[in-house]
Length: 276
Image (cartoon, rainbow, N blue to C red):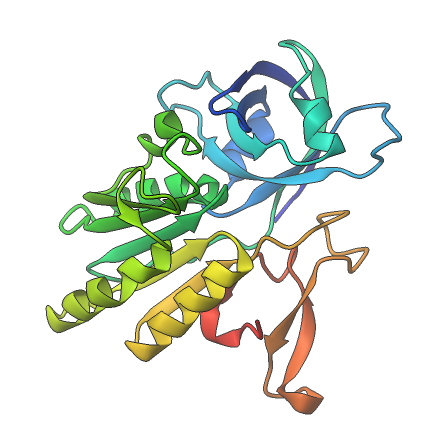
């Protein structure tokens, strides 16, 4: 896929929780090309510290998505370091260096029941998946969205509400919203019921690595196809630097696995192929 590189003007950069910000940018070339699960790299022009861009999943990208102007994309980011700390200080009309769309994205699921599992900021990859599935499967459109977080206050309620699902279930570490505990604890019973009903569920997950590993294990135990989007640190986003490699099982490699670039071969992998 052709990668766009250039400048994008910020039209909105606002907090949605104490730690998470929403940024909208004018990037029509990227808005037209982005597939569910892909990402962009963003960098403040002229800055040398930090020098590298930051990968952010595209939350919304379309010419006619409600709340967005034509050619806009929306990304969400957690303020966790120097780069994102600088991002939150940017005002409307400021420009960002941007390149993308990047990565392989999620495959179109062939299933009667799509199960989305997210933790932390991983829900940013979920909106486009749910919309695409709703459009392509109007006869079923059964989507269960399992979302985990530290507490009710830490959850981005506004943008989570924009993710289409026929059922949304929360899990929080402190029990202030939904199930008290890990979001993966909700998965076994749900998959068992769905498999028993003949729905051939497919799981798609994004979030912290321990959550992805447990999701992959549970899906395998129930014989369910599962795809995970890895949150691997990146530098270039285009496969040049080999910073973001992950261990992926391959039949023709010594030892049964090889390093694959998350930014190019991923970030989405079939869960059974990942060596966690």
